[in-house]
Length: 167
Picture 1 (cartoon, rainbow, N blue to C red):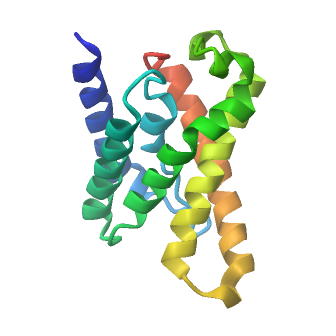
Picture 2 (picture 1 turned 120 degrees about the vertical axis):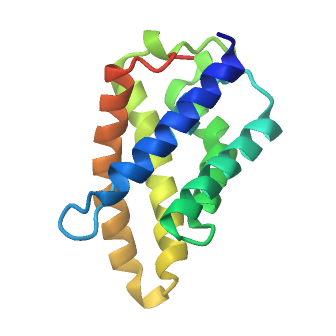
């Protein structure tokens, strides 16, 4: 199976899992994990960046259609897809600069930093756009960080349970 087919199946699986299972989980009434960002996290590094951002937009848009969130997930997905090279450089340094990152060979600490950065930014964008009220800034930050913890845990579990192609 080629990489494109594998990526399509991964995206479909994550969308179905997000929509059927994780959209129905509300920890403490308002915390949801967003595991579909695993696709953005592990998408091949040496791929066309414009295509990657477009695919991230489509992924977020499909989640928006099923979640009735009017483009919030699309905006958050595009943001983390666009900023991903910066977070790769912060997390992996020279390995990213020389394009030799293999996620299966990276130690847990670096992988955790990378997943955490993407997750926190995703949630901050998502909840800032959802709530869109400056007086609720502390609530946005609290909700973002608490949901990020849940998402980070779920993403790490997904990566170890399914050994995502470790691209």
